[in-house]
Amino acid sequence: MREIRLRYGADVLLGTEFVQQLNRIEEFELLNTLGRSDANDAVTVMVRLRLAPNTSFEDIDDIAWLTIDEVVRSESTQSGEAHYAIVRFTHPLVTIPLEVGDAIISPGTRIGRRGAEIILRGSSDGCQALVAAFRLWNDRCTVAVVRSGDADHDADAGLTPQQVEAARLAWSMGYFDVPRSCALSDIAKAAGVSNATISGHLREVDRVAHRRLLDWIGE
Image (tube, rainbow, N blue to C red; front, side, top):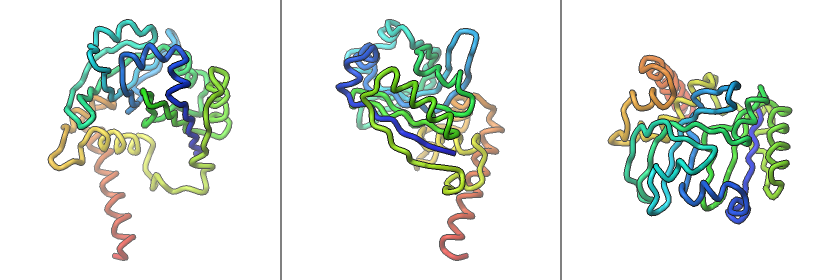
């Protein structure tokens, strides 16, 4: 699997239509993709976001390509109040993967007032197709290849993509914090699966993590 990261500076974003979003949402992080609809060119995602000062969720209705379906929960952070929300996107850049079957815009992608980092994962051809689409929209970006192929990385440790995304989602939502910042049911809802499914994914992640730790310490 290849991973490529595109970075746009804040000055670039402020000169595009995304200024509408940045005026209302200070930071926006993709946590999981819940569904795709070819019929209406929409992608439903789970995100973590922080609103701009003096902004409410009603103000987000003015963003043409973004609809908040549900705010799952909110929490106080050092940077301000963070909200976990289910969002529908119809912006052409976000729906490009509907036309590219072997590459995706991955969790961890961020868009905010400090700039944007777009994480692309998939086949080499698929990632290059997404890079070309973003550059066609705006070529004032930097491109970094983080992972160059299937054979030179064992980062996923034999886990399925669903298990990897479950681990990332659980980590980002604070499931592994002490004390925990969310319940198992919160992660299941964010991932769009049952409690039993997310529990099974995290058990396997836990098993692999312990195996790797024991290998590392020589047990």
